[in-house]
Length: 139
Image (cartoon, rainbow, N blue to C red; front, side, top):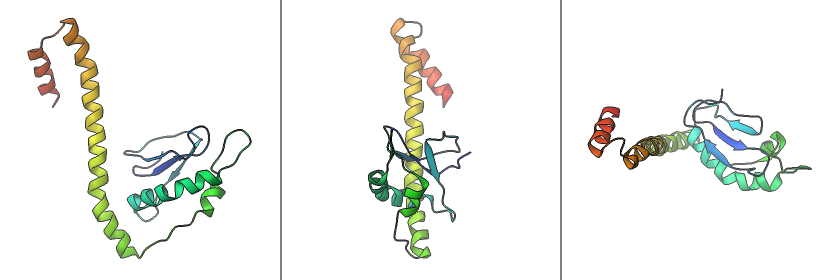
């Protein structure tokens, strides 16, 4: 399992170089790499990777699909600040990244609620008052 807050990048195919940070522990397939920080600085790692990904994609190679290899990643270079600066960045970034995650999860919940209720409202199966009661009960 890939830990929460790991930065994951698609290593080959049409979406080579697309990356994200996992909001929870997850599994992934073999076309991706997971980058997890050794010293708990996941947000810094994600931001540094965002600045390196174009270089990695440009260096990707392959006969069928461009592929980012472990060797490609090993050749990437980044400036690493003093630990106190890294810790300060994590302190500031943590609530920002977590708010983004919360917003994504809330958006998904709202979309699922809409997808569930709208057809029932349109067909007359339930009334608005009934939908309001269902929504209140879900909170």
